[in-house]
Length: 158
Length: 199
Image (cartoon, rainbow over all chains, first blue to last red):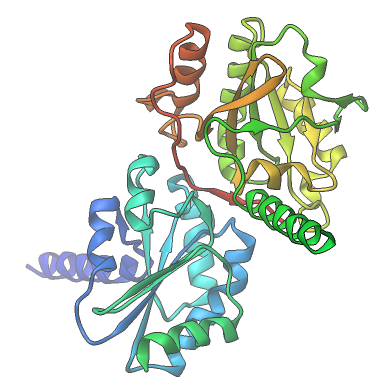
């Protein structure tokens, strides 16, 4: 009986501990739910990867803007890292940076079919960002400075 | 008269600028170039007198997608150079931002991987914007027609960057096979994630 309890405890710990480390990985169908929320918030969706230098440079701006406009904005960072680098690159990066934004991972090789569904103008280069709320959406195939990001976001929340 | 000329000139430059920004579409005539190869020579499309066309690949050493496709790019050259469609690889990145893409680094990588195709550097970064390449890897298949090189396909190499064995559609092979058979290319444009070209 005691050993059962210990085993139960052991599994409880095992179950809790790795949870923070666990990546939320989706195919495109799974990702779509994050692209069409219909509530009062404005969503800033950024596509990035740890190997993309300009992406890493602008990540803090998404953190910052979410912090600044807490009640109005939610940033979601969609990583396009390779599955072979989840353990070696992505997880250590997330652990080091302790990002406050929600990070999800897109793993879907059939890019030619899902890229145009995000925006018809997107040819696949990253970083790109999508800003949307229930009224409008705009796609940005570019990098942002913080000021540029604020300017664009204000068009959605004012 | 002078005014009209000025107007025409302005329109001309504005149009040129616009087309340079958006790059080529299918059916456009692609520019030739003279770019330095990893062997120190300068390479132009016009050097390939026997070619029926070209598989122009904007690629580099440092992008993981480009790296994932290195062996497949080499395989394309082995398969199609003798049939008249050699691979011409062009490295478009600013090497001050990406030192790992310097000509020396390109030479080393080509040697390690045994590349048999020209691996050129767009040092002045003037060629890739004309094509409209935005990322690596980014493929343009050109067909020689009279003296012009006509764009017949723009996009990805195939539909699975992760696993060459799990590929379902080999876009570039299908396009080149169609051109060799004198058939129209059925899928002329595809998209894939890639690393933005560093300017």
